[in-house]
Length: 173
Image (tube, rainbow, N blue to C red; front, side, top):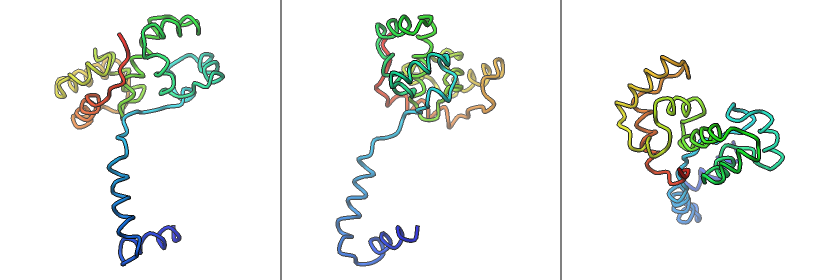
């Protein structure tokens, strides 16, 4: 930490010759950085596909939710995936919808399950939802099904909706 401070503090406080280049470059880097949307998980750490499927996927270099979603974006690919991994096609559809929702930062496996049980089955439905109405439904469905111990609040739901409106990577119906 001392070394980092020793190198960068003079750039900000003093008249260092690199100050005219470094500060605008740093600012441009933050502006150009893509917004983070996805909540990526290692498949081995969550209960979204059967354990034996996780092992087989890992052998095929598919280890994260992001990688799995890429395989399931097209309907024909989901059918082929179900056949290849000996999974029920309806279950693969559910997995794809959960993964699609999990692209939103803050939506993990439990929140995705809660949204699906609340009739928000994809990003399009989430993007079109009314925050207050959705929150009421989420609270009721979570109370009935005990999906997660943490109830989302209105700020979180609004954030999910805003982020869903910005994501272009939707699964094919």
